[in-house]
Length: 205
Image 1 (tube, rainbow, N blue to C red):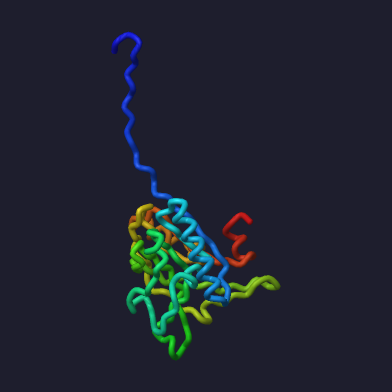
Image 2: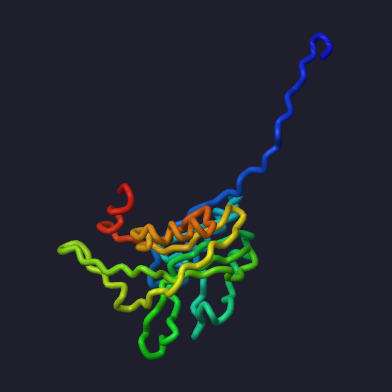
């Protein structure tokens, strides 16, 4: 190069990775309050540039409306928040009425993925139910009101990568995560609502 000038090395331009925001709420019996909290978190995440919002703590209670007889096989619910915000949502677990709801009142613990159009593109029904009794601390018998799912859901493509869908207590069973990884999952999602005693077995608290 001419004296006094230096060549500038070429730099490959890379596209920034899509931003992912994680939301967590504690649901209450007040559905309107739940919806306001859930929608507010998603709007805040979208305002910060998030493309995907995985949400736990039974966030689905607020964002997926109750519908008589609605189930995974019953068509898409009307979910306006992802359309409004232009984000993907990974929601769980919400209580989906079982096929025999009318006679048994049993539900599925369901994890759902919605695209920015508000369409449900993937669902997974929790396969491992949490029945635990820690004397003097906590008693839980999920199998008393929940029907286990029968299959693992195929990973679903999102702007952030392929999501593998699990729920809460599934974390204790490595086979499901290994199967999802072999199927191409790049991100494993476990929306959870652990109690303090059971949660301390998984997380630093």
